[in-house]
Amino acid sequence: MALKAVHVSDVPNVSSALYSSTAFSQSVEVVGKVAYKPPKFLVVGHRGSGMNVLQSSDRRLTVVKENSIVSFNAAANYPVDFIEFDVQVTKDGCPVIFHDDFILTQQNGVTCEKRVTDLSLGEFLSYGPQKETDKTGKPLLRKTKDGDVYTWAVETDDALCTLQEAFEGVNSALGFNIELKFDDYVDYQQDHLVRVLRDVLEVVIAHAKDRPIIFSSFHPDAALLVKKLQSVYPVFFLTNGGTEIYDDVRRNSLEAAMKLCLEGGLEGIVSEVKGIFRNPAAVNKIKESDLSLLTYGKLNNVVEVVYMQHMMGIDGVIVDFVEEIGEAVWEMLKPSKEEEEEEVFKGDAVQKPKFSKRELTFLLKLIPELIQQ
Image (cartoon, rainbow, N blue to C red; front, side, top):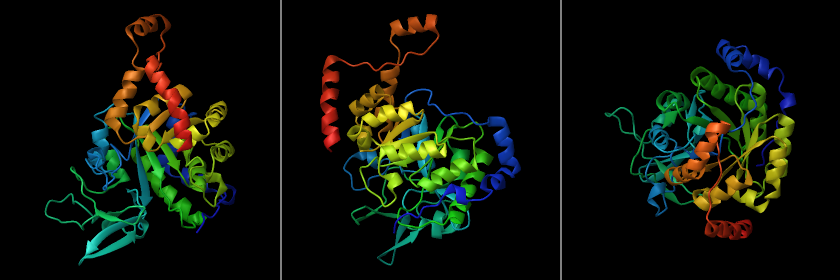
């Protein structure tokens, strides 16, 4: 089924209803609304220290359980600024961290799957490793896009967690990029979207403290609504940038994403990196519109691709190989001795990518190949 359009203008008094909570009102008064501009080129850890690809032969994709406290804190060991993770809300109103729409286990040799949002918190937490050593959780499986099912086996496992537990247990130096997760094939009514977003916002306002927060969502109306419901944290619209086509035209191009952001007062766009390389002219238009621009995708695990994006003026990247990319970006932005001496007089940070002629030649050849992929 196609996504059903839910117009923000059709939701009466949503903001006033949420602002009436004491905690939220106090937070708004203290923090206020500030236009979001990344202070530098951001590196964001995808689902923590990287997503899991269970069928991959690359060990880096099966080292640590994605979207877990262990994975989040592992990312803090490297030069990353934010971690990105996916939030859904259980049927009893608790925001939990999990990427897939369905969670799978095996009972009596039969694979069973349930929608995450149809589970209570207790049911959700009963899958996989348990915090209590005397308990055994249900075996956790995962289905690929091709329909293959794998045991969710990683070198360092961890229990499933809630959004509140992430705030309480993750290194406070890491910012949170909270993706508001909704199923592409479900028609969500406006009252459901509002209820889910309020559940998430209540946890954020109660526990965020000084931690930097960015909200993002592929669901256009969820992105617009979370912006309408609060004015403290920046909201980014996630898009495939035209690399996939949906019934909702707002999801099908960078131009459509930019229009949505400008009309809804959103702060930025997070695009599939291939969408950027297929349409590089859109980058200047987005920047001229005073919107921030981040990217995600497998190509962001290639150092040269990340270098090129910095040269193009993109504000940051979401990556799986957080150690390699984080350290490469740190080296790229680290000022030379000459620049450090110059900073003493200017008082400003110098951030310039450093390339050899060989590297520049490679990068210039790389773009046409990326556009064709």
